[in-house]
Image 1 (cartoon, rainbow, N blue to C red):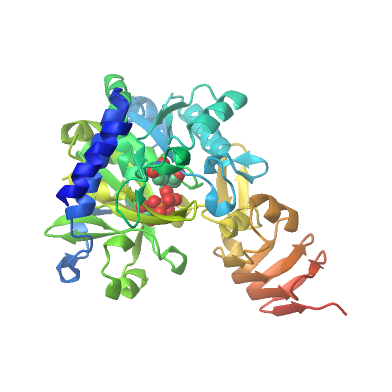
Image 2: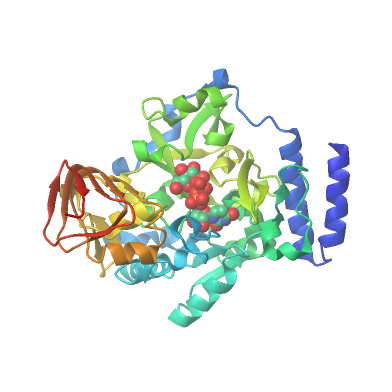
Length: 464
Ligand code: UPG
């Protein structure tokens, strides 16, 4: 370990230009690296408990934040700032740019939906809540160009830290000039607190009297600011809130909450001993799921920095044909740094992520409506919950491809599962119910005609 640490120091001496940001980033990485070398990565499965009742609240049961009376609670509305996590690329959806710039509904990108919904909310309450984006070095340039193109001049940005990727064999940074930015990565959204501090945004917000931040994934189209939670936090001196929702079979990979030694902890797959992964994925054992809608009191952040830590996540990737490791940590994992933390149970409508092309297809279907008065997406419950969608990955490789093959919204009527195998284009008003598979012979292209109704059917399309 000592030898690895010495080599790491030599790497930073060679690479860290003497500017403050590089030095701060090197410090952040050295701490992550030390955790990587020394920490126990799996929890002791016999030591965890379900979270205590007193650490849980249900949003629906909280007193409504009465818009008509907001005048008398300016103390609440003026204390909020909103931050969208915008460090990720759209690789899982076949896009090499910032994921937030993908057009997801009626020509609007994730970014448009986030910015316009925020503007409408501010108009409704007659307030000016600042909206920030936490960019990474991957997404910063594209994001800024887009903001300026669209005239979103009120949106502010800051850039998170930049850390080296490790070679999976040597466990040392990929030290190859020719790799450029590919040799680096952002160290996960848990890095938000250090990045707020290092960019000066934390002090700026505090000096403006902003006390509570609402942080969410930019791909979560259901994550709207809710003053009920700001009020709850201010009135009860709560430092950290994680919004959780009932876990379903599509949520097996996300994080959940547990307690170890009376301390609330975020549990994600990398911390689960391999023999207990089936327990972790089971919706019977773990009934709730982290939406990554997180609320934090900035005064508490300021008090706890620089020591805000969480378990590290070792993210394995293949880059330029080489196995690499990214050391990351999550904002959910940071819950354990805050004594007065709460789990707030919320409806599924606050968690509508678009993680893949299947989610994208759902968002464009009859299941959702975009309300352009509020820029919120409403989910049409009478059409049932979103189906599990699987599309042939050799055909449906990108958003453009899905748009071409599905030029019209699909009508899902209580559809639980939808699979497409092969190259199929779907016509207008195609309606799907139950479990539907559409399969074609390889190398052939087919069109499902307008008005087709498929009900619990495995349709095999063959050339006659
Ligand atoms: N992101 C950053 N910086 C990073 C990494 C990610 O800004 O260094 C952004 C990313 O753009 C996205 C968001 O963070 O907007 C979430 O990232 P993503 O990779 O989509 O989610 P995970 O990190 O896998 O999972 C988070 C929580 C998990 C929760 C899940 C809900 O860690 O507990 O269940 O979000 O989608």
